[in-house]
Image 1 (tube, rainbow, N blue to C red):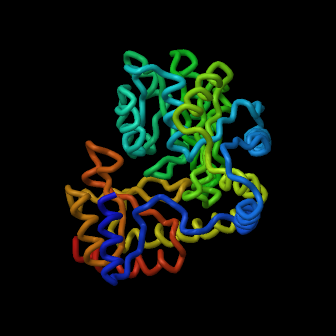
Image 2 (image 1 turned 90 degrees about the vertical axis):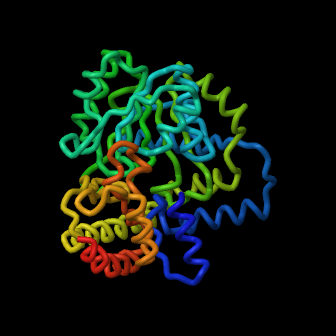
Image 3 (image 1 turned 45 degrees about the vertical axis):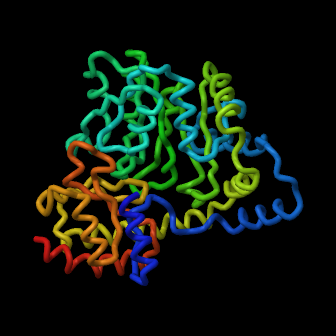
Length: 366
């Protein structure tokens, strides 16, 4: 967030800034979804409301894409994925619970657990593990944690857990009594193969998802939690007390967005081109050690040969080139000082311009 604030300050001063620090699409919501929102805004009241058709459509989505059956009643609509994560943690665990997370990982996992008085059991995951929690790592934890947060594709690395490994993780969790929370917010953003939901192998998993990434609707604040039958009532109780309902406009637009596949797949084609451009540029940047960017829109790069202070490094990169990137310390408080994250969710033209600015700058650092 500090990098983002500095980027906006420089832009306000007239500097040309390319925002590769934020993990959000630069594209708009689908055109048909926008048109529906205009129609609703002009003709309908905006009270508290939970869309039954949207819950049914989400349930059908899992049947169509994952081959699993869930009831619409298991779908709790939320104000984005962040409240869905809080609901999952509060519904499935009590204060004091121990929840395993990969390191590096999304900073909100660690901080949400702390805010809810739960213990974050960080599992170091490096190149040998493709920066993902493995079944072997979960089997080795002693004592077994109460839960584990999985992310596939992951933030900040973009790595995807292969189907056979997801099955192995689910088997270990079932054997050891570990409840799975699966953050699937980047599902649909894959360049190497399909993303498998944890529901395929663990029907009692808690699933977090959102319209923010694949559907290009981050500002609409619409997400969902899929709760197993034994936790549905607890999740609803917490949603209704803490958050009420998601925005009405977003729910109407989200239902339409499910039928905008052609437009949304066009965004994926843009991300794929951006990913290819970044991968081709890495040798010129002198970055040889990266996480495999299987999905999402990130490249997690080791810059330990250039710095041991990723925050200062990213600050200088922004001030001297106008390219804003995320320092690794956001995602890994132990080893993140030697990593940085690039987001290639901006336009292809901006990715190419960012590369042109960064190549000579990185050469000077070496």
